[in-house]
Length: 168
Length: 168
DNA sequence: AGAAACCCTACCAACCCTATAGGGTTTTAT
DNA sequence: ATAAAACCCTATAGGGTTGGTAGGGTTTCT
Image 1 (cartoon, helix red, strand yellow):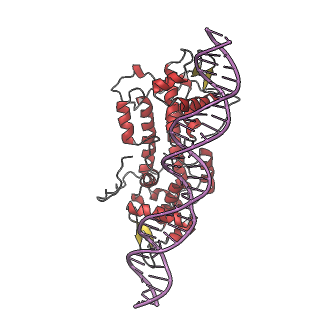
Image 2: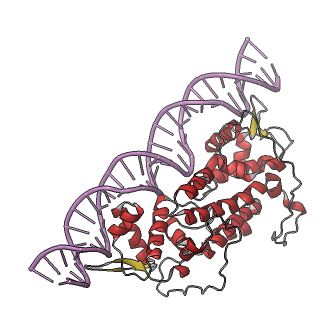
Image 3: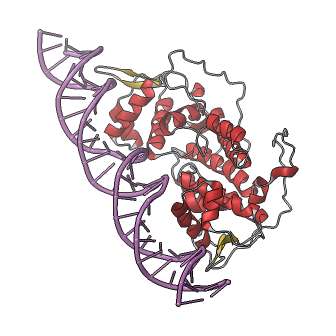
């Protein structure tokens, strides 16, 4: 998995919106200014995030963008998959599974790819926007080795009309 | 990190050479035929692997390519870094470290990137060609959940004239 | 009404990916 | 010696992706 410049912009914009959660809609211009992102490019990104129902827009004067769910219910994996595709280093999880089953000669290699994919997924599925914004309450010198693991977190519901279903 | 088609070809070719380790040099044509790879493209890849001192060539009639080290001393990370670059999902390890130190606003995000990179590195640094070729002695139905972890393995020495040193 | 703000499509330059082509050079076998 | 085998190296090229820019259309608030 590779995170592009565009993917980084998306994550930064989402972090900014998470910081201002429940403070009303924020203009593209303000997001772009605060995060130092190209405004028109950001507009395209926010449009994608809106179509994926991660953010919502408010039109007209005083309009802008805001998160559709609390930051604790938006996983980094969701954003990255949307913008940059599957987490697997080669193909996607389904494809790898099928290769593991069919290509006997190289199955051990594809299994390693799958291991890498699973490791990345484990991290990115369990980290939400809430985990990476406003870490005021976290000691500065503290290593995140253990990481406060909020496994009691509520899983985000599957939206019925969700576009682009893909396993990886 | 993203593994390209070229990277996959490289890994397949190396697996093939590992299977025939200590059986003399093998012609590009034979590697290409056995692994079903485009011959001239494979030639470029092997040239890169040779310049990186991972394989060596034997010229003239009866020539071909062979591994310079036993398969157990060639890590997958080495091949992947050579062909497809850093393991980190964004930038490389050094760059991420510097961003974590300098960009206070997004350091938590970059730390997650670094976690992903470390997870991938852990797997790919510890898996060698020997681990993924000829798994005859492994039961077919067996899941590799635990994976025979050969940590007593000797670390490959650093070659002095090694071109292209990069941390990630 | 009018301005603010999102919505959407098109376009574009640069770069990368995946090769292909073809001759040059070195070495071996006879 | 000599021819053939085989690697060595550079050049080229089409197609796709990346990272944007441009500009007008549409909706909604005040």
